[in-house]
Length: 162
Image 1: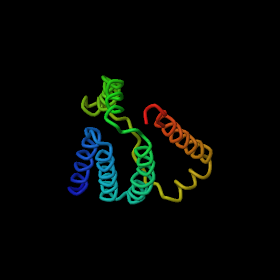
Image 2 (image 1 turned 30 degrees about the horizontal axis):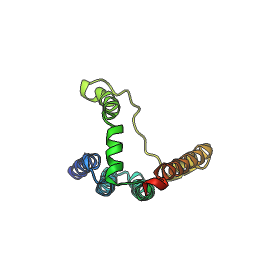
Image 3 (image 1 turned 90 degrees about the vertical axis):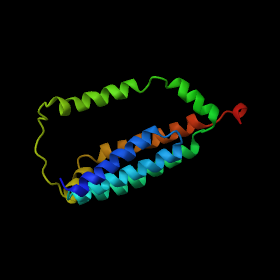
Image 4 (image 1 turned 60 degrees about the vertical axis):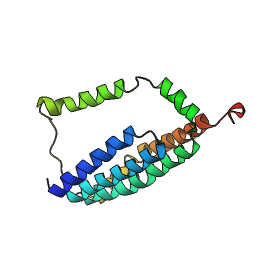
């Protein structure tokens, strides 16, 4: 791995930690963009230019635009933040356990058992996405739309809260 890829990976890790530790949603969103762009830089540094371009277009572009839409619709008043904090107290335990289980093979020295990665062309990815996986791609887009509409509905304030 090149020194530049390690530097960009470190920047991505730092930005990711800052993303989940910020109390202000807009600051967290900006650190998320920095993390996604640093990850794209890692892809470019390692020679995976297609993956880097997709990282920028799909995640740093489209997904962050959806997050901005959600941030604009969610109530971010101090009272709402206090309600969420009381509801989510201790909710970090489940995700922390899952991350620990995923990192266990890495730190325990267990064999990954993975298949060696082969280069994949953009044409092959497009042929799969618009061929046998077209229905799954469309269903995923409907799922994202339903999540967006659900977030909008949940974020709508009742008349007594205005």
